[in-house]
Image (cartoon, rainbow, N blue to C red; front, side, top):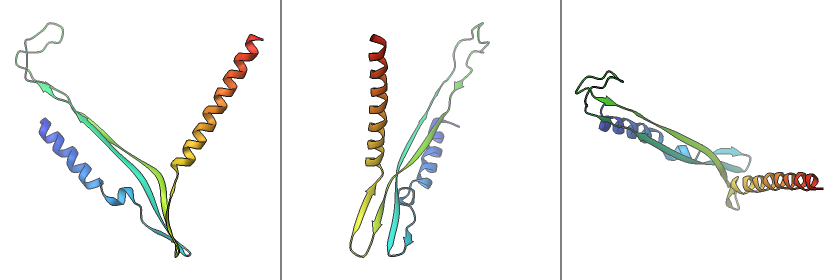
Length: 124
């Protein structure tokens, strides 16, 4: 497959998976509330190329004019970021990010405190 065909194949696959449904999940009704999950979606891909040919060398055993090539790949990352809560009186977005940041900061602070206490004990 040539490089243009590879890019076309990758872009067609992304187009079939990239939709609003990927970011906003199906609404779930619980009592008087409707909950809509929200996610962050990231796509990444890359592809390589090739050479038309070259001179033969003793090390690789290539023949003159032999073409070489390389492929590519990609990936998708989907991570939940929160949810939309719809009630009779209001609609609000509840973020998971704030909670993650607070937990991360607490863990980093705890590890830093442990490191500093160990360092202080060794000096004493």
